[in-house]
Image (tube, rainbow, N blue to C red):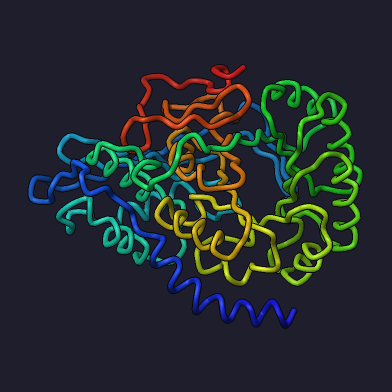
Length: 393
């Protein structure tokens, strides 16, 4: 452990300061048709609550739910609208009330132009500590607005290749064996399945055997901090490796970093940080404890910081994943702009709900993310909710 700690001390000074500073900026081509600030009016922020309804009850190691609270945001400037979203699963300790209370405090009238993105998002971040999902809803809407004003999608503004998007995982929550088999059959066209574990030893093995009874697709495992003993976790990972599992996400509680590092050192599979990771400054201390990171907009305050986090992780030679909560196509389309950068994508939140109110990023039948050439996040607000999975199956 001492070697890992010594490495982290050096990494904080060299990589976090220098590498991210050079990689994090928004790269615009010199010939982009960017509107000048003196031609733009004031920004107007509006927001409203929206309940995301899950297609199936969704079980993880600690809880099962049938819906997720969200708040939909809009930033309008000179008739152009950028859309954003905050999604609040229970473990984030945010609610519709807390997000709306935060958004009431946001004053965008002090800024001359939406192109002052660093200043605007820095101001939003400093309003108070935490409230990451609320901050992400501003960040996402601002990126959508600025992309529309520029006339380019964000994957292109960042200089990424949309053909390099990975296939998204499709998530199967903890449930009874018969239900798990039906969920797995429903996801038959997806290249990679994601299975939730971490409830108990019997349930963990039963979940995998149920999936394997009807599918031989690669599986990513998310234990959601559910395993309590490192020796048990390592033994189970060995068994999971034999069952065609490709990675393990957050095997133990985020407070047990040394135990997780012990597992990672011995694991035949990459071990990815989720609950242990929230923001950019968390990454250096996770080097060596995990093989890689799962970046989620609702935890890291949005696209601006997610871009920096992925660049830092890659500089530290860590694997990268972009993930999601239960979200509409608004936030999923935002995260998908980053997907050509990463090793894995877990962006199925819009496929797990029955009442999506946006048309945005598409998913091919095999799960590959299909980025739009439309500006901003490529979003269109729908007049009526849709079940996005119907488009795929």
